[in-house]
Image (cartoon, rainbow, N blue to C red; front, side, top):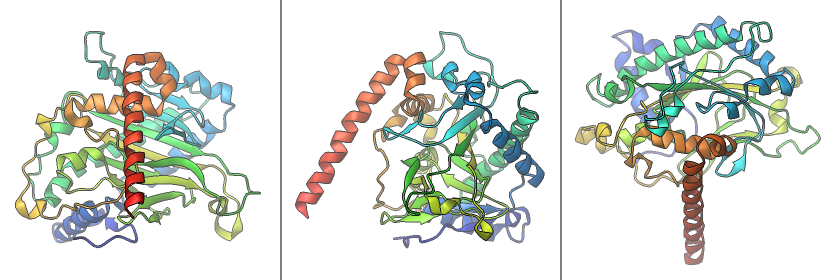
Length: 382
């Protein structure tokens, strides 16, 4: 049984480049995949000036008046592209305190005869260039370089698990790839509150992705990861790193060998004081979700793992994240993704996918009742 983690491991991308150090890299990557589900990727191959430009231009976007940002309101896009104001997104039925701008891979829209989840493909929404100078180019260049990194990790993950390098191509590199960048701005909390008062930036959850690549754009140490005993471990920003975490899709593909770990963004007044006691402004973060292709089925997700890899699987992991999507991979992966999104953005769901939203909320409610009953039963037994 793997030891309970107390920190997030660091893996150096440069070690993956040299044949002499690649075995060390793959060993460290395997340990992170199996034991933690999170790791810092040091020296990611995304230019520093591109990361800095991304932070500058998106920070300026979030400083715009609300009425201007709402010109690209995500509710107007059935493809879930655009701006969402603070409190409009929910995690496990509770509102998250952050603004977001979501940008995906541009694609043509599908006709009404296509499966409903193909509605996730389509164009992005942008304000005019004169309103947000350099924003579109900064975002698109960052997405291009991050996607190139994600394509490399398809191979590295397979090699770390002693699989053929192209094993995961069948679910990721196909006609309808699905990845997107979620840019988040977290507001300052009331400085008059006690310094350790907790505010939900994003509630406890597991990503549905294959992998998520997170750039923490400011100094705030708000990201927290839940270890196997339920303790929250801080994942503060480290210079020249991305935080990479495993999603439910990779966990499903590896039959639970790779762990999708519960995490949250927990805002406290104490986190808004930077170096030399200088107050920090909004927290900015950039999460790039490497998703399965929309048309991936349960049959596509069958991967033959070697016995010594299956033996690494952990069987008793505690998590308080929502459980209502546990059997979501019975259909196409696009159905799972769409269901997750409409429960996170119920207003958008009501506008574009009302029948599916009703079904998903009922499923969520029934799972919550079941979870509460299990908690009560355990308490009574104790």
